Length: 252
Image 1 (cartoon, rainbow, N blue to C red):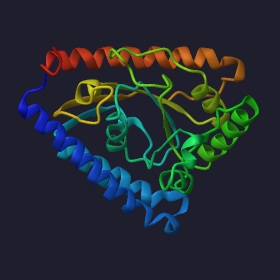
Image 2: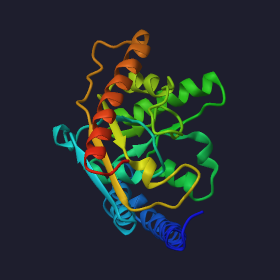
Image 3: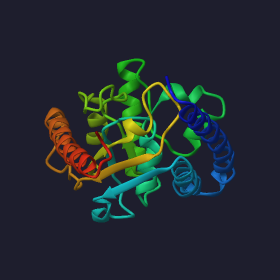
């Protein structure tokens, strides 16, 4: 049973997050027709929505490795997925106007779906094999045009903090797009926002961006090898981040 102060903090977190996200959603729709590929809208997401959300909820982000990335480069960032907080955390860490790989079904959500389309989010159709292949080809073209994206290859948020098995779709997309893959390890966001709740609590999230993997030399037959290599890198970096968090008293 949460204490009164915890319940109050949770109510504040949900209320602020909902209001701030609604305000910023309408804010990002204004410049959509004014900038190519939704670049200005994504700048607002990255520089206004994400930091505002994190700071107001008392979330500190400690990031490393991003200094080795080209600020103007096009990458596919592949991250483990611990909570909904991963989205603003990754947006906040990078100078890139990122998009997230999204399910095509979201296209039919009022307001939100058209925004995803106009802002250049890759939308993957999973309803049948032919549509899935075509949507992956379209998403690959979009990424090659200069739009860096984030994918969560686990496909869902962790239940116990560990890195789960990876699904193949993200790696099919990577081999279609032919841009460098950056493994991303996130530690601590599962404690900030637990699964099944929209409330977050103050705390620290650690993120590490690995060295980009050049896909030259990888073909369609190397999908499983690429998937295993990326997962191994993410697991190793996350274990290191967990140890650093424990040493700093951020984890029990």
